[in-house]
Image: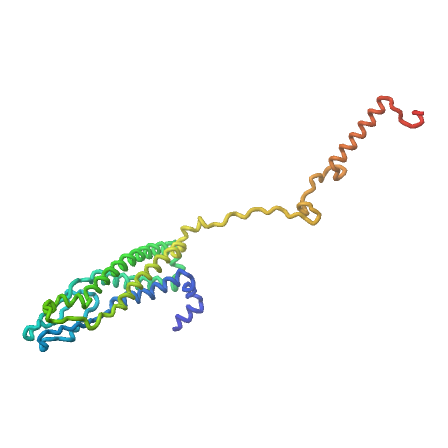
Length: 293
């Protein structure tokens, strides 16, 4: 407890608040439900065989089956309706491969999620060192995403076959006494498959979690970082001041010229007046009102 309190005080568990750690915790949680709901299942169904001779009847035939669903090994006794003798009847089918594959993927996913969470919390700096940790995490996450897809699809098909093989209406056809129309065979209780249906649902939820986590692990690798750099900032144009001049402290283009600032149009007008006066002087034009008189 002291170590946990110390880690909490140092903020080591903050990684669980970001998508990388939070989704990994969900993977750990749902992996447990996936393999436990399938691996711990046991079910049963009941049938009745009502013989023409009532003394040979068996109105409560109970058949039990469980994981890993090797149904061809499940046997039960059924009356022959011939003098109290009984036959051994076996169920049909072996669906252990898909069930065991699904459970195995769930167990290994749980173990890897546990190891990854431990690394995130206790050794996150080493996890980021040299970029090896994120790359390994990305590869393993991709593999488990594919495995959850394959195992969930295989187990969904296997579960459908298990439901068919354990349907009492179909099982009664395996009993020889039920072929005689004088004997009446019927189901009493169907097997409860809700737990197995939940296991398939948890399998596809794990598929979504592991596939979705690929993006967050990929970002930790830093491969995408060079493509996400912000463009260099552009220089902003100087804002006009209150007098409509651009750049309050902009350098005067006429600074350093003798006489200070002189507009171009004023200089041109002055030159034109001087030329005009000189022209009148050369032509002998009167220079005063008295001469003109």
